[in-house]
Length: 481
Image 1 (cartoon, one colour):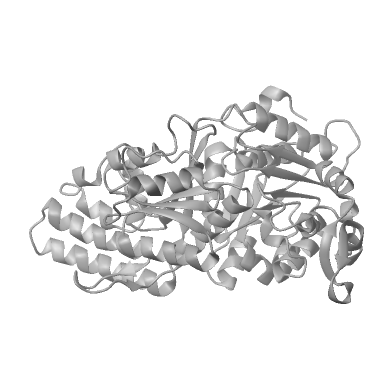
Image 2 (tube, rainbow, N blue to C red; image 1 turned 120 degrees about the vertical axis):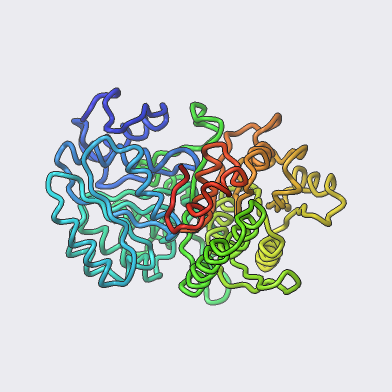
């Protein structure tokens, strides 16, 4: 394989990323030693760069002519991220398509990939679609299959797990990416490793359970304890590379990531209707910063899931798309034993987040406009283990608060003001923080969210752009200039 200095990526990898690729190639037997397995597990915490590691490994294998087709299976909110990451990091020829749309459209996109000769063909699909398209994916015959956030297949009886088990058998190599391979109990390893390589833990869950679980209770069918865990751990880690934020000391202090959201069809239709009406009203009236910002504000409320026809009316919930992704992120953080900060701009969003946390029995602290005991809320989050989440309204939590009990923050919605955004980020990245910080932005595709994010990346305020460039803020897919 290639030397340390020649990974096929456009950036210099951090040491832990370089070491991870070298470990993977060793496990797969591409460094002159016998292969330990056909597959490898990257047990990497959020923010440690597991997608870059995977892109580098795929490039290695493709350049060595070991693979031609790569399938990435990921949660729906992450599929678009893979396209961005490949474009940012891959220093080799590839053609990537995200399988979206109807089943017929997904099949057509998959077939079109075959026209790309002499490049690595990459198909990205979400878990739900993967099991529904198992036959078409098997016919495509990917050489490398990657399961991102592989805890999604921890249940061996789930349809998506069974489909990936079957696909994994015929692929030359498989990779799982997760920071939390064990979310409920040690038996969570089984299904994920069955996808990787059945030789490790066998093909029968019941044999596996009998070896590592103690059964008791009624009918002796309940798991009451575990045994042989040293052996289980040793077997699992023979093909696994573990990366934590605390151990990856070479990481940058702050990592920004994006989870792209696809609004449901009804919410998308409402958004486009309001967008069209807003443009028409502005074109026929006076173009002022206040008028434009008022229209943009309404669009931002829709991407967060709510529509308010009149200022005095109660907001109607029209989308659950962002909430679904927030629940995924929350689950990952809780499984890792970590706390989470969530910033949101609008009160209906905050109320909905509160409702979700209460339904799950997750303790939280909250600061929004009418909350008076702000110091008490911060203290609860910082000191008490049972308080797992801090919810902060962007306009009221921008300055002075220390939330270093968490190293991950989610921007459920965004402020139009760059200073507010930077101040919010500084709540977890300040004196007392022992870990590197990860910021996750929930962005609805093709909406005002993208334009606001582009402006913030360029350290601009939306208010500074609204008069001269106002049309570009409404246009679907428009980018900040």
